[in-house]
Image (cartoon, rainbow, N blue to C red; front, top):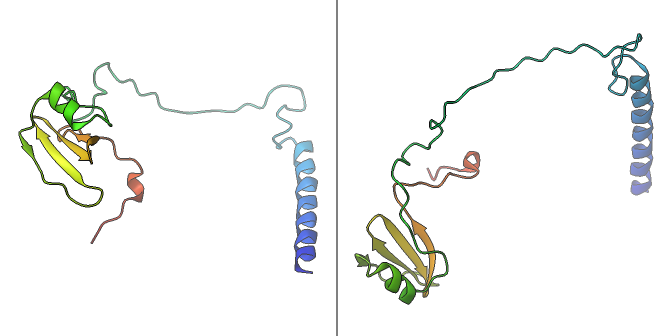
Amino acid sequence: MRMRTSLLVLVQLSGLVLINGAAAAQSNNGYANDTMADGSADPTQTRGTVLDMPAGENTVQGAATPRPSTPPRGMTKARVRQQYGEPQSKSQPVGNPPITRWDYPGYRLYFEYDHVLHAVVPEHFEPVAHGDELQSAN
């Protein structure tokens, strides 16, 4: 019985919407009828601001130095040693799966088991996605 009542209310509401929509289309102010009675278009004023930015001023703060070349995700530790040399320091594995950090001049590599998981360049921050959703730990 409850579903039948909900369906009846929905049908009644949609009927009201259709009736109101038809009335708006027939009036001069409705969206469906955008011309005046004499056939001319309804005059509309639009205002805005144009911001001219000179070339070269759209760089991100702190990105004056180029980002160092880092190994791609998934590269093995042996391949990293072969192409990038020995790290300045290595951390012991932490957690499960084991995460290891290797420090190179200008960046840090994080490994999961034997593969590069992420490369972090401290001076080149990635843009924060969904910053409005971040919450404080306090």
